[in-house]
Image 1 (tube, one colour):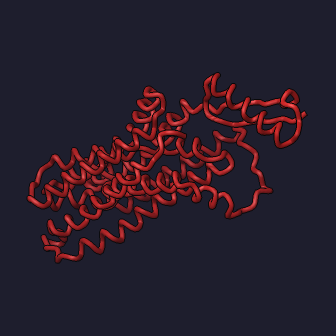
Image 2 (cartoon, one colour; image 1 turned 90 degrees about the vertical axis):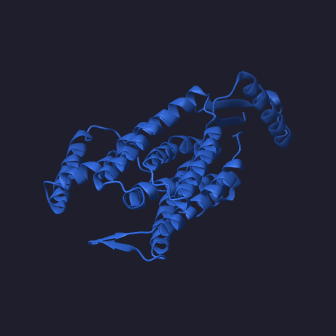
Image 3 (cartoon, one colour; image 1 turned 60 degrees about the horizontal axis):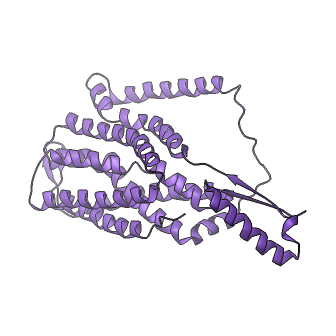
Length: 328
């Protein structure tokens, strides 16, 4: 007896009935077997809480970003930075040992050692136009926010907004907290809105565009305001989209390549950050920085070049977001 099995997201009864009917009709015609002999099963893969589970994991992972700014600057008032890093090294080592002890009784999935590295999964993922649009959107959104938080944000707040170093470090720590918390908030709110994730992604592109436009206008008209820190907070919340992006990739790709799709997206994330880091160094040095003691202070023109690049990327992000499909 021919047997058909399908894996899908959550379907209505009407969708299931229509799917089974069409599958059996086509299979019967091709195989010359009466429809009555076919057995069809549908395995639904509910994704209601998938994004929330990812968001909790990401929230824990952001602890390092939170500790690396304001707490680190505060401790440097009392301890040498090398000693702080040594202490952190021992803390991490203790955490690894604790995990090894606690995970001894956990049964992890068996490793399939017969799988070989092939190009097919990568080609299947990159062949889909929706994936390419999503990767382009995501790497711009994440790259801009992470570059501000990890590379240029603190220096910009000190040089342009004339913010003290301790307050600038606090702003970046708050950005990390917001990024961590909003992964959960975005996933939860999206679930309340029936998981219409692509709509959230399109709104995020608009927010990035408007936020960077405001920063560029502040630079052009030399409006030195602490309100830019609030815009940084908005960008941090707006870039907390991994808990939405990963479920979209799982739903729009075959199960056998969904993990590959997520890995390619992460590769795009950090490749963009690396490229932007290099580009920012080049753009900042286009204009001669001033010296204030032993500290270099970069000019408004330098920062305008950097945030102008971010603004152009936000335009591209907006363009790619409009091409994302709401139906998947």
